[in-house]
Image (tube, rainbow, N blue to C red):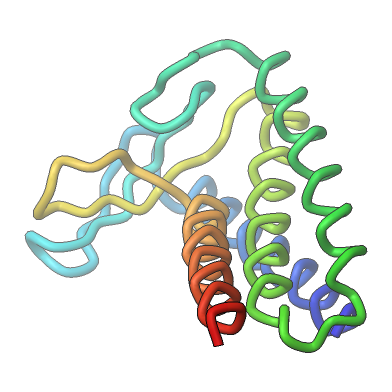
Length: 154
């Protein structure tokens, strides 16, 4: 499973970086391209903060958080490497690691993260593929915790 997870992490990071490069190359900064009118648009933004642009300009903070988070996730990967009943946790960790690395690459190389996915029907921060990987990873970990609790209850 560790090989699968490693390949998945690399593939997700590559997808994230390709999407970001395509948006930068094809949509002007601040520009918007509707994909599904009233539902979903691609909007090219630079974000040097977190969601809702909190902690703007705090590069040192995001660097420390990314390194610590990757270390903690690596420890859990190591713990779960031979446990077949934790595959969903491993998958969640893989998604979270890919999302963390994808945004960390941007912060290190550019000083900001490229965001592009805009939900037009709700007031929600514009986000990127790496953010989606993080969200999916957290959901998978929560499912894994729920399933582990059910296993222990039996």
